[in-house]
Image 1 (cartoon, rainbow, N blue to C red):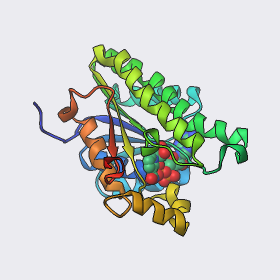
Image 2: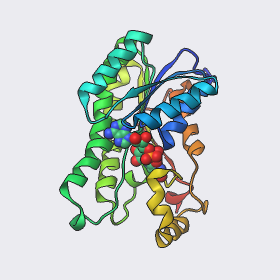
Image 3: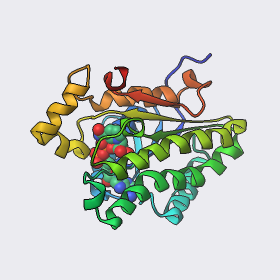
Length: 253
Ligand SMILES: NC(=O)c1ccc[n+]([C@@H]2O[C@H](COP(=O)([O-])OP(=O)(O)OC[C@H]3O[C@@H](n4cnc5c(N)ncnc54)[C@H](O)[C@@H]3O)[C@@H](O)[C@H]2O)c1
């Protein structure tokens, strides 16, 4: 067993790497020595993240990417393999959220959430898996959510997308297991990022979240980066199709 978490020489893609959890994951991988592709639609924030990583002594590059566009994902894979000859880790992290009851939500808003959060993960795996299959090595980590396990009113689109990520993770894990590729996921509860701004500023909603969380607080970005690093390492080599809850105890009772 290799207990080393270092990622020197490894090439890792983090979608949605410009901000929030993706930014933390990109910085975490870079601090362990990986070459990190920060892949994001938000080029300005993505470049700032890359600059911060490089200033801290890490290796990172911005790849403008909309995860819903398969041709963009495939072009990025070509560009990265052209430069590095391999891709070791893919973190399908890009995601959005919106809260509205089903009857109040526009169909296009529902579709957008499914498109980015679920179809974007499928597109990413489809684009990167052939490279990993060829090299007979790979770690794919998908960003699920507590809402992939439990439901809350007003989150039908988001929860459906994340429930889909849970099943997609299991299915792809089975399709790729013979190629020495581990496909797993992490499922955080509420973490303090842009995505949860609304939930945190709505007093009633925030109190409800705290009441449901034995830890009595939101998680922080680093507390999600740890499990992602674990799934990117050899420490998790026997984990296949697993989704790890990182929920401060929400589902423990
Ligand atoms: N923050 C939480 O509490 C929480 C909890 C569970 C799961 N998650 C999941 O973690 C992931 C990251 O969430 P976050 O909190 O860091 O959100 P965030 O809003 O802080 O960051 C999301 C990033 O994804 C990028 N992005 C959005 N659409 C994109 C697209 N089409 N193509 C490429 N990039 C795109 C954004 O530009 C941004 O950089 C999401 O999948 C989210 O559902 C977050």
